[in-house]
Every structure is written in C-alpha cells, then in structure tokens.
Image 1: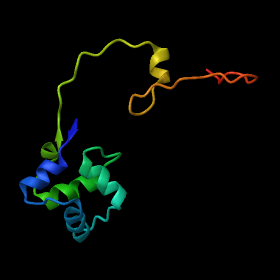
Image 2: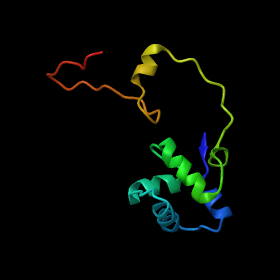
Image 3: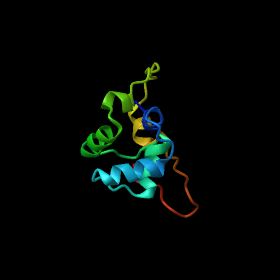
Image 4: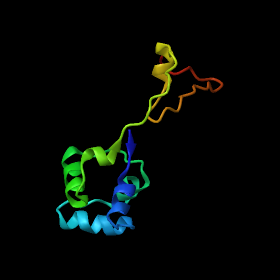
Length: 106
C-alpha cells in the first residue's frame, strides 16, 4: 500500500503539514509534530482507524484515496531462518560474535 496523504491534501489546496495539523486539531484529532511528519512524508508508523476517519472527514475523501494499492512484485521464497532474521522494515539482523562471549540464542 502506498500512503497518499500529501497528494490528497494538495488536491484540496493544503500545501503545508502544519496547516493540515491545525485542521485536524480543530476536528478533534491532536497529532504530535513527529507523527505529523511521518504522515506527511508518506511513511506513517501507525494510523488508527478512528484517526483515519477524521483525516478523511477533514480532507473530504475516502480511505481508498489515501491508501493506494501497489503492484506486488514476484516474491522470492524465503526459508524460515531468513524470515526469523528479518525485522520491521526488512533489514536483516546479523549476529556477530565477540571474542570470549557466547553466541545469541537462536
């Protein structure tokens, strides 16, 4: 899914995150500057469904306008071990041994 908040806001002549943040606060949704930055940049960490409803109400849009499906590329089969080594964001965890210490539990 692609988060499309900035484009939807621009279509409604809202060009600054602070302007949208003020409008959301007037509608009862107070968002911190950090979370607003993530929403505006297209990389939200989390979005509650109740918050999504208020955002849609303020922007006079639907969730389908904000959440645009992207084509899924062909997935490569991964082993269970590879899946266990991944963290949120897809960065693999690498285990490096230090001299004189035991390895991490697997």
